[in-house]
Length: 107
Image (cartoon, rainbow, N blue to C red):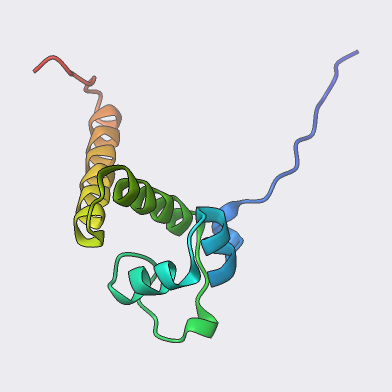
C-alpha cells in the first residue's frame, strides 16, 4: 500500500503583512520601516501608512537591508544599493542557468 502525504501551506505572496507585522518580523521599530518606505527602499511607494501591505519579497528585502545596515554600519542608501546589486546578480545567474550556462566562479 502506498502512503501519500498531503502538505498544506500558505503562499506568502498572497498573505500581506501589516506595518507592525513587518517591523516585528524584522526586529525593527515601525519608524525604521516607515523611513525605508518613504525613501523608496521598501514597499510599492504608496503614501497611506494605514493601507500599507507587505509581501514576502518585501520581508526578504527588509531583512537584507537591516542586516547590511547593522553588520556594516551602512547608511540606508548604501544598504539599498547593495541589496539591489545582490538581487540583480541572482537574476543574472538564473538567466544563465536557464540558458544552459554553468556558473564559473574562478574568473
